[in-house]
Length: 179
Length: 354
Image 1 (cartoon, rainbow over the protein chains, first blue to last red):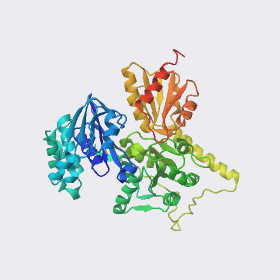
Image 2 (cartoon, chains in turn purple, yellow):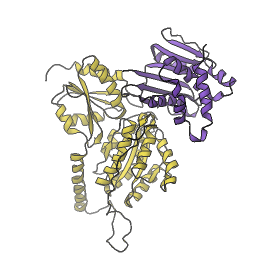
Image 3 (cartoon, each protein chain N blue to C red):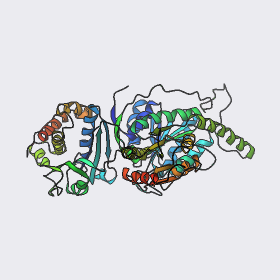
Image 4 (spheres, each protein chain N blue to C red):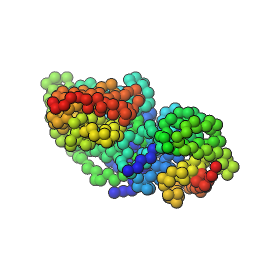
């Protein structure tokens, strides 16, 4: 019986909710029980945004994540707010191009990825979020990386099929990032 | 079974309503249910349906009355303050014996309150507006159940010529879960009472809630309550979770029932025998199973996001045979599994055999 609880947090517009949705769809395709819960309200108008994803072998009880196994943060306030929510031994993924704070916890694994800079350098500046997700997939071993195209097929709308290749590129960049 | 997709609760309700044959939606946007309205705005025009964003909630519910009187499946949806505005119309629907499906994705109150999840419209949903009448109240605890209870809600409304209300909350409305949209056969009901034109072939159907003759109005009420009695006998729904050997019984619905399940699993791991009866219909309330449970357990815990509303029905149903503890948060705050655990530990202290 395994349950993974993940929090994604950052500014509205960084693709925080989409990142969570991508991970949840990975769970759906892998026939796991999943839930995705966004913050809603003023966040949607450009403030801070976060979402909680649960992936489990057993039915998901409460969809609210108060103790996260993994945390992905894309701004300082998010790190401040959620650092303490990570369980000992958990993993924190930080976009170090945007977050200048350091994780103060010593009982968690921390990965600093300059995702927003990498995305800009590669001409995919809106996909820093997916670079972080790529790294999460690598370090968590949650899902088979070869499934990503099947997942992208599900969540990228018919109108934006051209974006699939860019998402694939971003995920690969993160997956292969050693830093 | 059809392939599962990830859907938000609000969108799943809308899709299920379309599958149930609803082609008329009247509403006014309000957080946290707006995705439902938006989904209908996108889909209904392509299905020869009617989507209308009314000038107010009051206008929307009166449009619902009109379409229902014409014999068509119709719905509206809102969140707490909006449902208050619709209350007058809900009473008129009952007085006219018209079917309707109404969704309340609750937020914290009273007044404008907040936009975070709440269950504090329990009294309003189960007790209703002015006059003697009842509303069938359905309380889903998952996106999948939001689909099945929407289909069920339309069915019960037509079957008993009543309003059925889906009582959800901001969390359920906003969250995504895998959902199957396989809803099975939809039953169609004859509506010989509908005001669809006589074609000079039958007497007029009159849809009206006004009578100035007390004896006549009383007889309408009595007839209506005979129908409500059938609903109470036949349509109660609930889920029992780990109740076989339970010594403590949690009563909770919707999102707090899910939080409670986490706490129950944790308590069971510590050897505390706790289970849950989760009402799925809040009216008719599962009185019988709760009354029977009162002979077996030593205490009940009402877990709710309100200041003690559900607990009143638990105390009535169990006839106060055993203590009922209240575990609650309100104003948009969701109780944590730890909050529930604390109440379980307190209930566990209640002494020995009774």
